Amino acid sequence: MSDKKNWPLYEVFIRSKNGLSHKHVGSLHAADAEMAIENARDVYTRRSEGISIWVVESKYITASSPEESESLFDPANDKVYRHPTFYNIPDEVKHM
Amino acid sequence: MTQEQKFQAKIDEEIRIEPKDWMPEAYRKTLIRQISQHAHSEIVGMLPEGNWITRAPSLRRKVALLAKVQDEAGHGLYLYSAAETLGAERDDMIEDLHSGKAKYSSIFNYPTLTWADIGAIGWLVDGAAIMNQVPLCRCSYGPYARAMVRVCKEESFHQRQGYEIMLTLAKGTEEQKAMAQDALNRWWWPSLMMFGPNDKDSKHTQQSMDWKIKRFTNDELRQRFVDMTVPQAEYLGLTVPDPDIKWNEEEGHYDFGKINWEEFWNVVKGNGPCNKQRIRARKKAYDDGAWVREAAMAYAEKRRKRSEAEAGIKVA
Image (cartoon, rainbow over all chains, first blue to last red; front, side):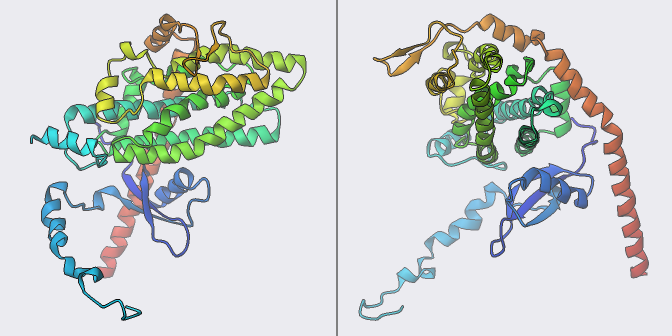
């Protein structure tokens, strides 16, 4: 395996325009966060894809595991009462 | 159901596979091989075109070529980044390229002898690449598919700038037209080879189709490319260097001649006109840049220690 000469890996998030959230676009290597921003500008925004960049070193991201996805997300499936269509309202009642 | 069956069921349902999902080792290996070789092709692909940046015939052509070569670097980086989500290390991939263990598209082992080659590369080589890459936007592996969406968006400018160069030359003086024809003569067959061996000789095709890494076979994509490109050559008033090219009314396709596979395998094995030169250039760029990478790392380290020390003083 590698002898760890790689620059650290950064994940890159781009806000494409004001009013939208930053969205993950990919990753890149850089010596530090400042350089990661500069590289991200060249790699991910050559055609005006963004107006703001976030970078975070990949090792600082904690992700949920696909093995836990049942226990994390399935409980929401049987809670139909969290959705507006669960409630019966006569058609004559407007604006609801 | 075994894990492998569950995995295949997801693929069959068109559910994308993401980095942390369970996957068969062979799927992971196949993807690392394919994505890293794709990345290497983008990076080595900068060399033949970079050859003409300083000699572009006008400023308009020069800015376009610069932007295109910069895009190729970007495409390489998107792809390395996708391969890294599978656990591949950047240094290992680069090392495999330099040692010859990893391959890259053989087309980049041909030389760019005249300015017309820049036109032919954009038109034919990028045209063939688009044909390969558009179906990869629906590849079963999420990060690869997403990288391909970005690549394809940028690639169509490449093909158009190439065709425009060919069009200008083809409408120019006799000498310019001859230059365009010569470039077409030299790039046509290597472009057809870009799609890889015939289906019957392609050892990876069936498994990659089952895993939905590939959506079409080599021969299907090659046929589409021929069907698309022959009329474009006719519009230029140039002749495709294949006497067997003929519209087949019954099939609704162009028939074309036999590909010289001996040449293909010879170039793959390292005996093409520029194989050694390309790898030498890549190694030199990497080695000459070593001190920059080390200095940047040392500087980042120094700044980190300083800011930690300052934070320490504040706490005290």
